Image 1 (cartoon, one colour):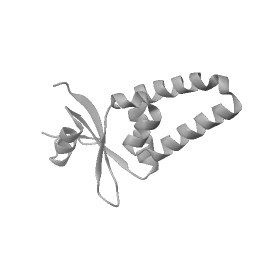
Image 2 (cartoon, rainbow, N blue to C red; image 1 turned 60 degrees about the vertical axis):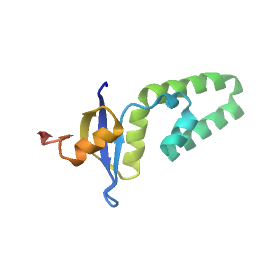
Image 3 (tube, rainbow, N blue to C red; image 1 turned 45 degrees about the vertical axis):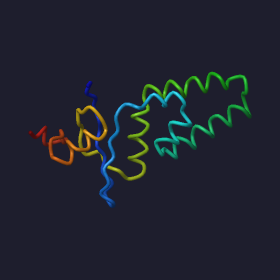
Length: 121
């Protein structure tokens, strides 16, 4: 199985852990991807952008949709990280793992690379 990099985020008040890696293939359907990931701000921006394009420049809709597909498909992880930061989550570690669950396990067991401390074995 191939390893990927995941960032680990912790909610300061609730103590919940969230891992963010590369976006899934559904990211090529931006509104569905945002809904699936619970990215409400991203979803609101997408809907507003599509609506404004339909109202003001309908001929540009396909270009706008194509642009958002590229952004969400290739850089969706960054969108997830930004939205988590806006909601108060802190990025606490970076983990190389095979899945989100494995990344969370590595962080919980203390085997993640924590900024400022380096990796622990």
